[in-house]
Image 1 (tube, helix red, strand yellow):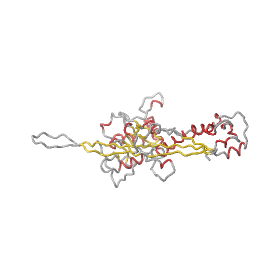
Image 2: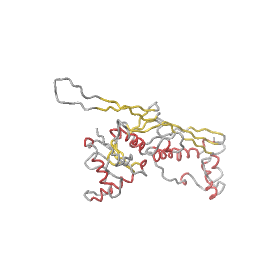
Image 3: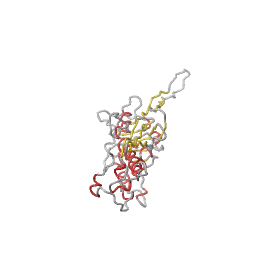
Length: 332
């Protein structure tokens, strides 16, 4: 069962003494809440398991005047889709396991149904609800690669890194790949991020573009701003992560931690699709009493991706482009 009590029993004994212990004595570490999707994703709901879109590709139109009719221009349509994947939680506990040890305050009494024991509510609120969000954020949202035969959080969906790789290799409608930035380094991150930003077409200067990076690079970027010495500030709180003279900002994502990646887009273009409105936080848990155990089950559909590849930028290093195969940078 999922309640592992060996250490508690060994240290505190196989009996319950009411010494005033309660929930306040269960000291838990911080779990990672959902940040990528909750703060920066644009959530859409669908009844389908594939969310289908199309990207118009506009061809150049104007030409010098001549009396002869010379058709020029047109619109091509690129199919685009986000595939939702079904994710589940299966877990089980025996609430009676807490009765004869230090955790007895989480037990019910003989008049309580086993599924109504306080330990069940605690398990749902403090473990399942929070762990689902941490598993998705740290393993699936950016780093995930779908594997229907897998059994880990990273197998649950194709994360944003997979979307970047697919977009970089798209023959007809690729994302924008910026070369020449190099692997991020502590001593050069300020110049690297400015050079990356300057490689984006000037028509996006006033557009609220977000550069997503692992969290450590935001701090180092701001420290570099402070070190430059030409900002007149009263405190470090006044140093933000904006790219000077633009409407662009650098944002650190927990989902990208452990990588050396970067990608950029506008918030509306980072699409998070779920099948039902109750699915997005996986809060609907089915409790099933089986003998003296309580099974906890949940399943939901969701997927993430980009609405338009032309509104996505990344570096050659992020998608594994090499100097021998120079990337094409496409700006529209």
